[in-house]
Figure 1 (cartoon, one colour):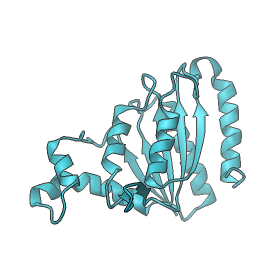
Figure 2 (spheres, one colour):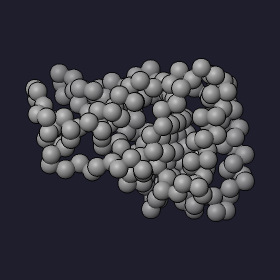
Figure 3 (spheres, helix red, strand yellow):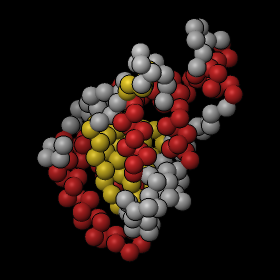
Length: 200
């Protein structure tokens, strides 16, 4: 069993999402002692944004040039990490009503035609990232998840569904400035249900 641990908080020490991701991974390894962890910190991985060269290489038909292979190397590496994993544990703090730019860059780099999704004969996208589950931690200071100001949760669900991930659970630690203890208790209870296989 391989766990892909993805952090996207800009804070290394004071991050609630990082602490919760660590907590979940710790408990998963306690349940699956043989498990391995693939660590992907998207903030500190020097992820590029999509540009002319990267887009051209990603959509290149046929053999890639040596330069294009270099351009796509990091994207290929992260796609391999994703496909090799069994469980994704993703930390996604809410920044200015949405996901961090580093996480959006990561999503852009793992959305690869022919690798993580393909198009049907009718032109519909079909996800290729199957038979995996995801546990997504979303944190916020004041914005309530599900409110009109929340552009994180549905986006993350839609993107993961697009890649083929259907088994997705959310650990919600929103409104931390005013409701942390209440949200913490609910999150702990939900995590126990998830780890015991009671939440589908």
